[in-house]
Structures are given as C-alpha cells and as structure tokens.
Image 1 (tube, rainbow, N blue to C red):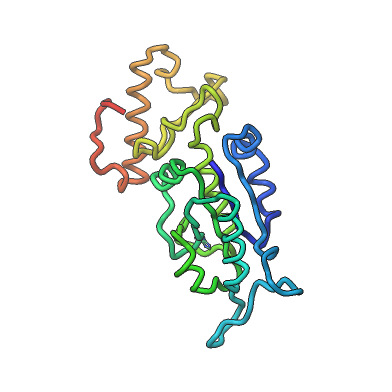
Image 2: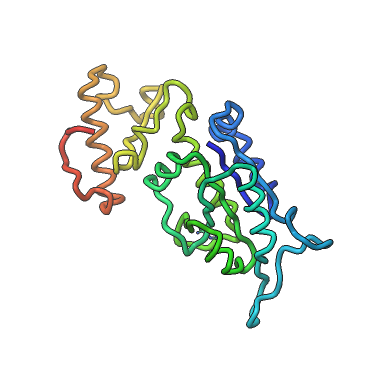
Length: 233
Ligand code: ADE
C-alpha cells in the first residue's frame, strides 16, 4: 500500500510514523509512507499558501493552487488512490472505514490548517472527507496520524507473525475483553480463575461474556443484534 500525506507540517509525522507498528511496517515495506509539504508547490517567491477569506472574517484560508499542484504531482508519480480530506465535516472514521481503506492500493491524506481550505479544492479535487470525531482540531495532522495507524495495523504483516487484529475491540462489533499477565496475584488482586484453568473452551466463553457485558454497559449502541450467549465469534 502507498499512502501520501499532504501537510504544511511534515515534521509532525516524524514521531507517529517513525515508531511502533506504523514505523516497523514502513521499514518492512508493508506500507510506503510519504509525507509532502504542499508549500513546496507554491507558485510565488514567498511560497505563499494562504490568503485572507473573500467576504471578510478572521483567519486565513489555504489557497487552491499549491494543493492542486501537489496532488497533480502525486498523480503523475503513479498515486491513483482517493484524495481524502481530514475535516470535522466528514464521514465518521470507524473500524469499518479503516478496513475499507486497508483494502485499497493506496490513498492521499490532505491535512488542512488555519481557518480552512478553499472550497474549490473540496468540490473539485477531494474524493472524500473523513472526521475522526465530533471535536475541532487545529489541523488535520493528528487525524491523519490516527487514520494511518488504524489502517496500517490491518495490513497483512503489520502486526508480526502471531498477532492478529481479529480479536480486538470493534473487530466483531464488540469492545475487547480484559487481559491479564503475571503475577497471578498482585497487591491482593487475583487474576480471574478461569484464565489459569487451561480450559480453552471455558476461557473463550468467559472472554465472550466479558466482551458482551462490557459492550452492553459502555456502548449499548454496538450490541444491537448480538445475543448474550457464549456463541460464535
Ligand atoms: N480537522 C480538524 N478537526 C478534525 C476532526 N475532528 N477530524 C478530522 N480532521 C479534522
């Protein structure tokens, strides 16, 4: 998969893209991650990327020319995937959307700044708007890092050999069951007996019950259609 990110602050991605699962996946060639500064595509000597809004009002608006030029250069380099604009006005980003994006050969993430982006970019260049939640960030960069993390960890090979995203929260529509490790007793708090039993069927049932109970308490909106049984995953 190839992911291109367009931003005015490429250095914001050094941490999130350089470490952990995303960093390792990039190093292993599971994903090709490229971060570009669309200021490099500004046409004038001062590399201007923003201007005052027509009609007045506070703040600055990102100009269309550098964004169009940056996307056109990515198209010329072979990136055919959708152009996704991170915006609070977008479709809600969920595990289902992450899975959908993980099935694509690639995509471009466009990060906005300042008061906004010239609407002609949204109307004539952007394929989709995605929001990571009902709050306003100062720019799309943290949202892009969230999308990249959630998508890349779903790619084959990203989590290493024995790990699988199949049992995590949301993968089967439920929040994930609790985990424990050694010691079996810590400060008087014991690990649930069943996990020490070696009875894999009982453990599977316990985990399923925990996941259902947790989801019913915390996120009843997710449990529609799920029966409270030890049934199939
Ligand atoms: N940019 C600013 N706020 C955002 C949000 N909630 N989701 C995605 N991009 C954003």
